[in-house]
Image (cartoon, rainbow, N blue to C red; front, top):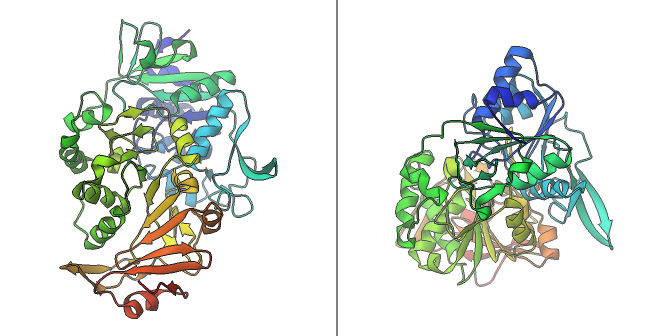
Length: 507
């Protein structure tokens, strides 16, 4: 039977050595008050300590001194297993300083491993991750020198086929944020951007005789309609009621609290972008790439568009009318709306459906998308892509590996180089005014996020759209298939590549 508690009372359920699973998505839907209560207790008593934290999509709030950042920095955590570290500003730096063990697994594979644990299974099989960095035959999931545990990902053969087997430590504490708890302890997510892995996390925790702690904005007397109660009260141990975070109308639009007509999506997107993202300046190169990539969209396509430069595809899909005829998706579980970006990435404007995250990755892993548009830090001569780790920095693979593993048509949106790149375009003529000092096409990528070998075996079509040309993946490497007007093949393309490429006759 659940109890209503303060955050400080609820976190006394957490013991030294517990494995905490957090239901959040990059920078949204974090149970902040519970995390900060853990820090207060740790600072006062030195407990709990030796914690493991698991999160499919990360648990930061874009603030190095809030949420879990403080107690992680002060030494309460021995190990983190996470899909994405982008919003965890302090933690991701500490990882590279070897302060504690840290493992980066594909977001969807963590989600499925949590669901497997909820059903009493030790782990989940997947083809996602084969021949990319997480594969133990390459690097494995450990991020730093301390991270040598080889139990989280294993190569296995089933019926003659290669798989990766993903296994998590037994979850003993669930930290969840919901909207409301009714008098029976049932938890609804009505004013939330998503429900993520909430139910699976709670089921896994109870299967391991652990404790479920839920932070909500309010208590309600009338029980929620059955379909709206994501977590049944019988799975809940502690309910912490906190003041809801302030949300203006723009952010409220992302919860589905009121209907947004399709013809107003762009207006709401501009409102949300203005308060959720850092200031953005018009980028000619990004516009060239977005416009060209958007031409590959087809009517009735089911689509995923990555954050950053690929987001320009949405703008040009709206301009060319294709946005009316495609279905956009986001990893957190949203389908049929317009994905938000910046600090509220994971939310959706005008979503038609928002379901559990594990179900979304079922769709991605089985090739249910028609096309995806993703970013890239590096591409090598064979077409392998590194999207998750730069020199002295990393954000994590997130859902990238799941999205690109089986999607029939994969389009990478990237500039040819960076740090100083200047491009102009007048009347369709592209001019490279200055090249950047950091190349993106390299002899060998630092770490593999996308395997060209695996893509060829899967017969996926793969394009690399830049601000000056388009490459296609072939069995022998990259081929230039299109050169934009004004771009010189030798001066602007070949002379900047550290390897030879084939050039199509009609390029």
